Length: 110
Length: 226
Image (cartoon, rainbow over all chains, first blue to last red):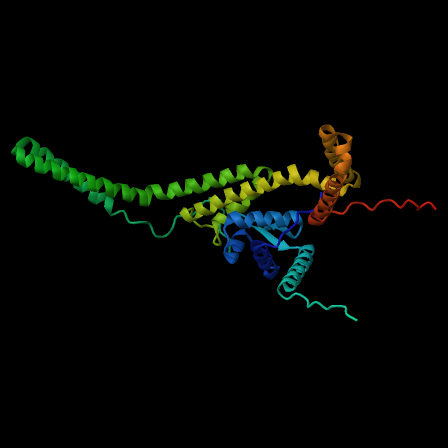
């Protein structure tokens, strides 16, 4: 089965931006992603699920689990995700540039 | 960093500021005195005074009841109701999430506990819990679509034999259909349309491969042995 295809929607890009900018010693988790992107839980968690299926992000549980509160699930962007996100952004900007500034037609005249 | 002792795990702590309960004694006193006054008025006073006393008692009782209801809603009922709603919705979301449920339950508990880890379960949290339900439904729909639609489609797109079979099969069906209603001459006349169906299907398969990023295995070279 092929990996889940990721469409670069605004939600996906916002989530990936937050994950990319998160320091390794303080990785992002669900509530933080909701607060930083401004989307609700009904939007963020399906996006995370899609990104996980596509292998763009990985998760890990807080270790050691804290005694006085529920453990958190941290998300990090994988190297594959970073590469593919960069490639997708490049392709997107190229498509936009081609659409907004089409190449001038150079007639192959004699 | 000091760690708190493990007390009631995953339970929210009571907030520091308790809501005011000033309505309760006022309402109780009002109800008591109104009851005494109406009883005295009913047995001892003139009928016209009785009606005034009873009317006043009714109004006082009404106001006291409304006050008590508001107070109860603010203090006693509201918090447990919010807590019940949040837990109920989260439980429903966990159920809907299926095999991912246990992991998501822990994750969502942490979400509801907030940054502090001890946020009380209030109405804004119920909205977030409602989002969990929506999230679980969306994930399940996505999984179902993946299993019911994309898995067989990917299998066809990945295999050269299956995709060729699909293209030729559907084209043959179209040809058979035309043959049945219009005969052999009809098939010959519609040869262009039949080949258009075949090429459209072929392009559809190619577009599907591009969209799903699926590449079929390269065909074996026929002259490899030479």
